[in-house]
Length: 72
Image (cartoon, rainbow, N blue to C red; front, side, top):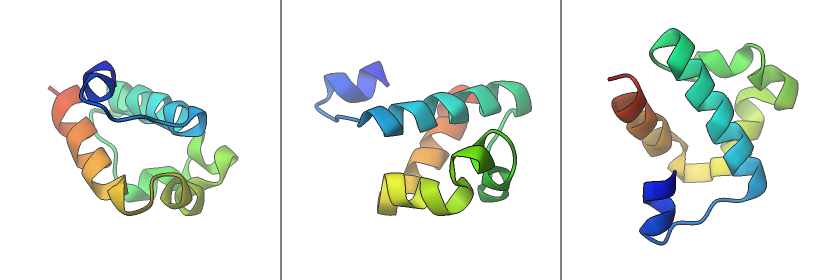
């Protein structure tokens, strides 16, 4: 996230909360897939529907990038 912010990208507080949950999930499970958003803790925040609202068309690229960077 710091690298993204240093390159000029900004995140809303809600996006940061989702990114932290996604990072924690990848740390525990090694990857994240779209169906993972149906599970806790994501479903408690609105699940796949809400994550799409938060990140819009960037969601797939964010997931791909986080999987590539964090699942190493």
